[in-house]
Amino acid sequence: MANEFTNAIVQNVNHVAGTGSVLYTAAAGKTCIMLELDVANTSSAVIEASVEILDRAVSASAWRYLVKNAPVPAGGSLMVIAGQKIVLKPLDSVRVTSSAASTMDVVAAILEDVN
Image (cartoon, rainbow, N blue to C red; front, side, top):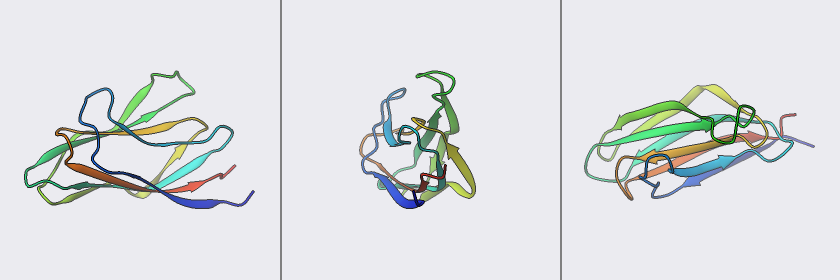
């Protein structure tokens, strides 16, 4: 099967620690590459952003931080992944969390099915 590019988007990211909002989950039997992940602060105050990856090869609860509580300026953005690539194995997930409710949108560019 051919590789396919897609965007994963979450608006108004969840602010509950340990829950967050799941941005993307790699399909069963598919390896994917996350090429970019951008966080936008939609509020008029500084917020903090956290991004985690679930490593299903370890366990269903093995969340690992890419960035934890990174400040995002009011009306600004943060490029969490830019230039490097993150490999997502089958059923790995990416979760994002904001420090405040309804203040953060996230967009990720993903290359799917790179087996």
